[in-house]
Image 1 (tube, one colour):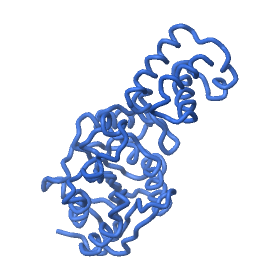
Image 2 (image 1 turned 30 degrees about the horizontal axis):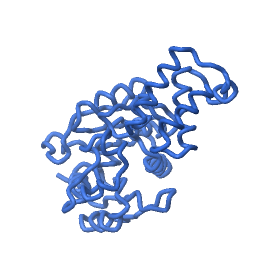
Image 3 (image 1 turned 135 degrees about the horizontal axis):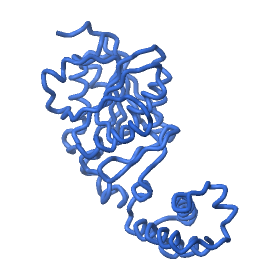
Image 4 (image 1 turned 45 degrees about the vertical axis):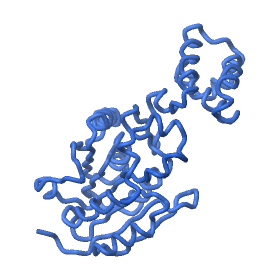
Length: 286
């Protein structure tokens, strides 16, 4: 195994820092050798089987191109569970775990109806279904590829999330007639002008449909979801957004203008504006 670490440093030195290279190799070895992290450290000086060595070297070549390790492994951990991921879905981020934690902590009542808009891998919807008190969870996405992956994760997690292919920018009358206590969304929020500053493993591998919004309309999805929420949410229902740190106040103000109350901007563990939440005070809509 020691030789693999040395080869990885040579191959990846111009892309990743040395400590990150070591961490990436350990993840690859855990997957290929089906060993725990502890065993990888204990047997670091042992030789790999030829087939395992070839598999790891192939994976290192993919890392060299900038491909995210989550896609190479085909899975990633989120909120204590493993989720299958592939290039058709956005890779779950640690910040989104904070969004899930907030919703679970603030909503203890049993049997709440939850809607996750833009579900991707299903990580938010499935995590809420597993950890809330008998919640009924529905999840929407426009992408067939994403829904296929999310449905697979639903089966693996043994949860009962209902997945639907829905274009939130063009909701039908039937879709608007549903009722929920909570709407959560981590929609596309990266402005096109921010693309140049993004890492190659995001720009060249993750789905742009799940990332970008027009520079002139950064709240495109938030406004549409919030407007729809006026009909979709039950009285006193709540809405939770993961946001672009640049638009926290703008998003909260938009919600206030639409008659949501208690709009609040919440910072993530890095001190960046990351979540906006609000509550609807209006009576049930027609």
